[in-house]
Length: 105
Image 1: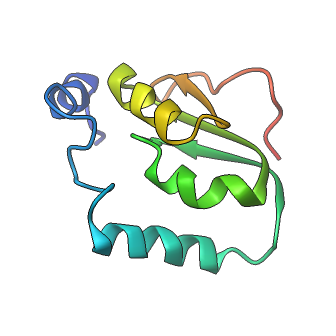
Image 2 (image 1 turned 90 degrees about the vertical axis):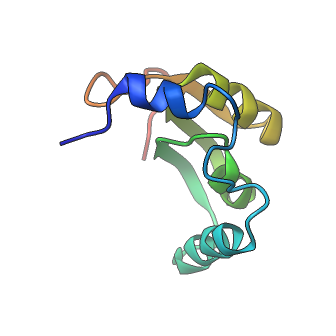
């Protein structure tokens, strides 16, 4: 059972940060812990499904030569592009086709 597109769009209808990731010390600590758990100093590429407003991307972008985030909600991607302008963000809903272009290694 997955989350429906209508539900996701409803969550983002009034805010680009429905879970408060940007200002939550707890969530930011989780993102930092995710980065710290990665075993290498750098990566050729990263793909994040459900990137939301780009808060995890902010922690990963400087260790990735290429970063691609995918989310179903356009307003979330607008916020992600603002938070991480050097990232690549595409709109899509999984299950479905993954982004074309940059190979994901």
